[in-house]
Image 1 (cartoon, helix red, strand yellow):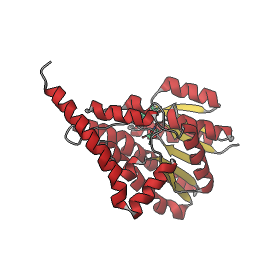
Image 2 (cartoon, rainbow, N blue to C red):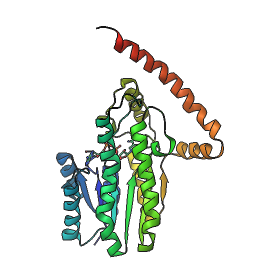
Image 3 (spheres, rainbow, N blue to C red):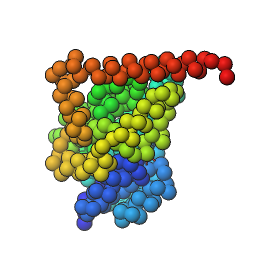
Length: 273
Ligand SMILES: NC(=O)c1ccc[n+]([C@@H]2O[C@H](COP(=O)([O-])OP(=O)(O)OC[C@H]3O[C@@H](n4cnc5c(N)ncnc54)[C@H](O)[C@@H]3O)[C@@H](O)[C@H]2O)c1
């Protein structure tokens, strides 16, 4: 029997690409997603299973754990991938949108880990793959709530990597830059200028979801902790580490241009219609 993997947000985008990649190699795949129609279709396509799940719900997580115990007698890999996107300047993102972002992108991952760690410890095996983002390492202006959530996921993953090692349980943090998926569809932003900028970056990406899935597959095989999926991001991180002032320049330049566009947006908003 193939090894067992559960992927949240597996109905589309990076999650579906990972589901296909692991299924192709004979893994048994459980797709968990809010979107039932797309989740069922994904499971059918790859010959896997689907379970509806909102990563914000403790009850849904408990149901996923029960399913794995009942149907598979355990689990080998948990991929905390489900996520949404958001942007906006600090004074504009309201607290309800902060709660929404943190509840899905950070606490959704925390809940997944809390639910499955006891099982993994008992098995003395298991691998938690958390899909964070380069946003959690680079902190581009205009995306503060997303950055904070993803930095939290990186921190959580690194902590668990040490904490779980004595039990033979591994952790991986995946940090993609922009990839063309449906993530723009979930975007909440009080600043249309910033939402447009993010969709331009997403559309312009040259790294595909399939390439990210290949890298995650490899990380599970080798036990690699950090996966920086885009070559230019690896270069940017090196620059940030060794020559931080040089690394800052393009970010400052981009933000000066964006600030000008935002100020125009603000003026247009104040004009009586
Ligand atoms: N696409 C990118 O540019 C990019 C870059 C870096 C990181 N990421 C991260 O990759 C992950 C996957 O994103 P994607 O690009 O494939 O986006 P996507 O929108 O294509 O897919 C996200 C999936 O998550 C599901 N989902 C959303 N909220 C959920 C919830 N509360 N409970 C359960 N499922 C939920 C959606 O139904 C969807 O199937 C996210 O965590 C995202 O932050 C994406």
